[in-house]
Image 1 (cartoon, protein in one colour):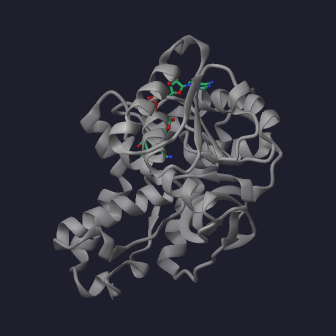
Image 2 (cartoon, protein in one colour):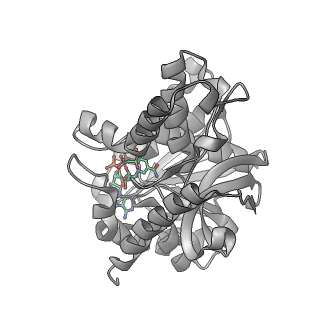
Length: 311
Ligand SMILES: NC(=O)c1ccc[n+]([C@@H]2O[C@H](COP(=O)([O-])OP(=O)(O)OC[C@H]3O[C@@H](n4cnc5c(N)ncnc54)[C@H](O)[C@@H]3O)[C@@H](O)[C@H]2O)c1
Ligand SMILES: O=C(O)C[C@H](O)C(=O)O
């Protein structure tokens, strides 16, 4: 049987994720949204299927406003939620999106108790934490997407600065998916060459700053919402790594139980993704400066978690 991938939220990120995934022929896709959207998820699913004969893929897509067709999914991607507008932080979305996560988890998990859940809704680390707690699932099966996107932004900016192929650039952004995220300059290389040998400190600092504010840069350009092409591609990479059991090492937000000295928080760290979800958490030795940045990122998430109102 073909794997079943459910995407909850058929908006910009959800539909774009479906697009990237359909092309990869990883499994059947179910796009779900709320009843108020009426035919929208069905329309997008049908439209994407009709691109198949042209592009050359055979992915089956279903659009729906009820959860029945999602039953027994292998993967459930949660993109349901409100995006920010210019002038807002991701953290401003905490309570409106917490209610959406509560709704989604209560409907999706009973029908797909064995699925791996990928959370995309912002503020990412707090929504992943809420999904993990409400679902009752093991931590390796509730994973937040952020680090792949943030690292991709950093890789893009470095490739632009050096005029080299993006594939040559390796970067790892850890920590929370907020403006206090932690780009790991020490572990950033171009064709294996440390970035510090290729760019002066001021240029590296400017790239780090632009990476941290990368989501906000897109929001201020789009004006009506936030990024979706790169976020959707990041989710598709996670889905592929899981379904193909790739053992891919990428940064993701996961519930920590002592790793990096942290407890009871979802936080972006390097993980190994395979068919069981998070199969390993990799602990990097941090220097004093990196540890201090990490602590600031932790504090921002803890403040957001403290702002969560009860259901
Ligand atoms: N983690 C990341 O890297 C990342 C990247 C981009 C966007 N995001 C976040 O993803 C979320 C979605 O962004 P978007 O641009 O797709 O927004 P969007 O408004 O285009 O789409 C959101 C969709 O969610 C649906 N929805 C709302 N409540 C729902 C519910 N209870 N059940 C099912 N569907 C529901 C809406 O009807 C809408 O179609 C936002 O919170 C945004 O901040 C995160
Ligand atoms: O910036 C946002 O609000 C959306 C997303 O988290 C992003 O980084 O693009």
